[in-house]
Amino acid sequence: MKAQTLRIWNRQYLAPALISAIITLFITLFISYEQAEQHKQLQQRDLKTKARQLSEWLDINYSIINNVLIDLEKLSNQCSEEILFDMRSIMFNVAPVVEMGIIDADGQLICTSWKKHEKPIFVTPPPSQLGLRFLGPVNVEYMKQPAFVLARSLKQGGEVNALVRISWLKNQLQNRSSELGFTGLIHSDTGRPIIMNGPYARPQSGLKLPIDQPKVVEAEFNNGLEQVAAYSPLITFPELSVVISDEKQIIFGDQRNLSIQGIALCLSVWFLLTLLFQYLIVYLSDSAHLLKKAIKHGEFFNLYQPLIKASDKQIMGVEVLMRWQHPAEGLKNPVTFIPEAEEKGFINKMTSQQLKNCYDELRPILLSHPDFIVTINISSNHLLDAKSVRELIHYKTLIPNLVLEVTEDVLVDGEDDRIQKAFIKLTAASIEIAIDDFGTGYCGLHYLGQLPVKYLKADKCFIASIGTDSINSHILEMIVSLAKKLDLITIAEGVETPHQVAHLDKLGIEIHQGWHYSRAIPAHELLQLIKISEQRSKRDIEIEEEATC
Ligand code: C2E
Ligand code: CA
Ligand code: CA
Image (cartoon, rainbow, N blue to C red):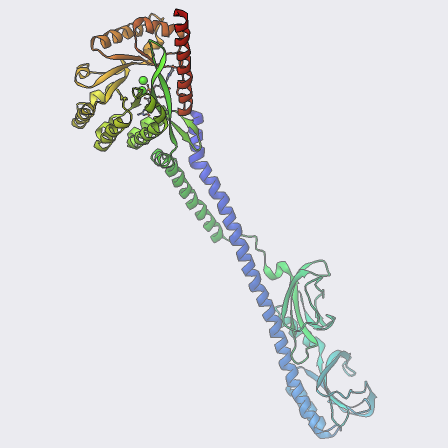
């Protein structure tokens, strides 16, 4: 009992809870993964935007410087007071510029925004290529600090240039990138760093050079760390790119922690799934649902137990017994499902299927032996339903010796109007009745005279008592004598031993049924059995005839 309670508890509560937990876990993992991916993409986009904004900011500054250099370029390559003044006002107005200079065609720095060089300083001769270019970082003569040089060559030879303090650039870059691990400027073609904030590292894979468009790379870097980097080339100097990078964990954050809301959601999902599974289990294991499904899928089938004629021990008929080939529990005996089927109102449909199967399977015997008895167990539900009664009458035309086995309590129910009407219809159709398990229930014996009862099936318990001194052994004798007086045929059920056979023969019981002769068997085995028994009796007759000759 304890084990069964535990099994029910496991099936009804533990299993749904576990299955729901596993499903919830999968859902949570899936959602977390999706969220992490989304978050990652957002962070990558964010990093790319930051890099692009930085490159745009640099572009704006370089464009401004370019414009002032163009203005200066128009003036002259001389170092007049006027030009000196212009250069200083540029410095004053354009924040990043710390120094301006003019180089003549021979590569001599003749003038800076500080002063005119009486003794020009020899620097690299300017190239003839026009347009904005950069140089550096170079050390500024006066401040002894590195600077980034933006220069434009003059048509008449020489160049004008503006120096941007590297430390200022560095600070700006870092402040504008929320101080991530590394921010800097690199060569787009080679990846070589020019301005660095933080330790610079390159991805081991995934970065295609030259960098010609904004991109994000997530990879293992050559410092051995898993990092993410965003690259954005400048428009003013495509050969330069802004880089922002940091460790993956810092950029994406720690995704492993579930929020309180997440935990609450998981628990709710788990709880709802558990309820759903519990409901499904209860619904699916509901006997009504199972029986209905079994009828639909034809899981009920017939076995036939031979009825043996006592005088010659030949098969003279069968009792049709039902079995259930349950998809999960295997073969089930009728005592485990018939009462439920009667209670839930499925027995009529099952008996109807049984009759059809019976006719289909026994047709060869019925054709060759029209007097072959076929007894079928009928419950009171069946008799209460007019349609089922009509069906029985129909089958009587197909199975000429169809006998209905009813128990004594059904006869007691006979007081119900509908059952009485059913019996009247059955009598009119000449359908005979066998009283099943006779002697075990209450029966007002007066019904025996009113109904088309032809057989009394003495219950197994009376046959089992043969050879004992119990009261049942006397009851069996009384049943036999009652049947004889009422001109009824007695069938002994549950005949298991030769000793019982001998005793039943002595009592003059006409029909035997029991394992001594055969268990309930499928139709094909029954057909085989009948064939063998007929061959044997034919041979016996022949031997007998030969002996008398
Ligand atoms: P029942 O109508 O009294 O059927 C006889 C039962 O005794 C059968 O059990 C049969 O297999 C068993 N039996 C036969 N010979 C022997 C024997 O020598 N020794 C012993 N110990 N038992 C023997 P089964 O097939 O398990 O059926 C049990 C009960 O289920 C039946 O008792 C009947 O009340 C019910 N049942 C079986 N099939 C149907 C059916 O198709 N419709 C209805 N309404 N009830 C059925
Ligand atoms: Ca029976
Ligand atoms: Ca019986």
